[in-house]
View 1 (tube, rainbow, N blue to C red):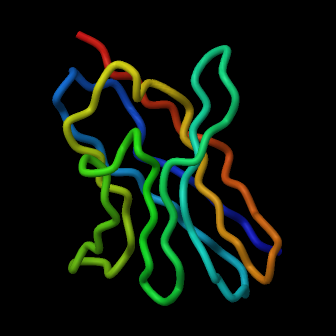
View 2 (view 1 turned 30 degrees about the vertical axis):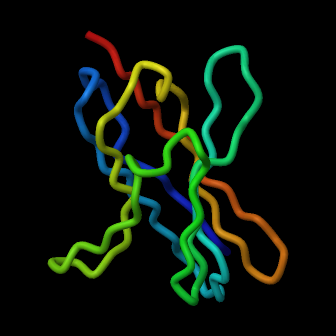
Length: 114
């Protein structure tokens, strides 16, 4: 059984940074991994994606501030979010895409506020 768990959210001041993690368990071939977010009262929107070939894609709202990174200590991929703004406040959902099927994590809350 495939399980996707997103984590790393929290409360941060404007201009601060957070690093989101998306853990995947179970035997599955991941073609794409990425993140969506949903702010209160708004529809879920695409944030970023990373293909197995290393192609990165970012929404215009986060381009230049968010980036996928790899931690050399654990060789895991993270979504590094820098220069955070109040409008980045949302629940962030990680997902993986395997052969056209999306598997979603439970969401992690990000709050950007003074």
